[in-house]
Image (tube, rainbow, N blue to C red):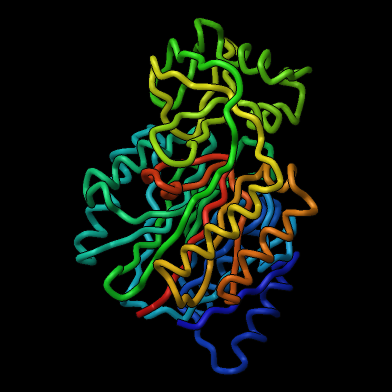
Length: 377
């Protein structure tokens, strides 16, 4: 499989870059598009569709090609993968029936391929990623291979989109289903956050809606222990501040983070990207030190050494807050990841990440970097 990455700040720039990359006879069949919601999503999709290229698109909080980070742009990975080895599905969940929708896609995938694996994008900040994953596990099994991200919207946490040829949704699940017998896919998810203080008890929650912690409204206790100020609906940066100061749920291996993404100001509760079980005990966590960047690079190198000695392309989903915490050093992390295989790489800054944590289970993550390598056999 041949891969080429292109970027641009406008529809015209992407069109010119596409035509330039097709001039040598390259015939891509699939485009992975990470795009700012401020760009012309429909226009970009039409340009690719006109060249018979299947589109897998997600809106972002920032985009990158290799180590080059941008915001408000379009980053696209072009692949000439055999069309018989993949299929795109986009299904909506306006009734919050996340598990049901995921199971529907998984059943279709199982009919298409004996051993399907998945690249996933979700839209709507309040969507429950854990329920989506549970749907895939129910049909494919607990060892299902899936990686992906929750779409972003330039840190506003209001409306996000996933899209494919002729279809776009702000309450939907998009999947590239890969034939694992023909396309190898391996990845890792690495976090690096550190616990602080005593554990707190989730005293009331329903799925990904957290009402109270230690019998205190979830928003209030997060504000208290996070040392936050001016947490009001009028503060446009409120959700970014909250996202960096929430407890996690841990089963084994690396931590699994659960920051708030949507606040219900009426009762000062909030929604997270994944399930937070009632009665679970969670500590608050401190943001990672700079040494976590080295941990991520070493993790990718270990992936190459042990599971994926050769790869055709690399896709990276990184939590939106990392660019705020590490910039401009975030470029060093991306350059280190790129240099492991030195192959075309595309990535986005997301609201949440999907993958198997180091030593852990397949789960929806936050505050994490998820790296996915592909190789057509």
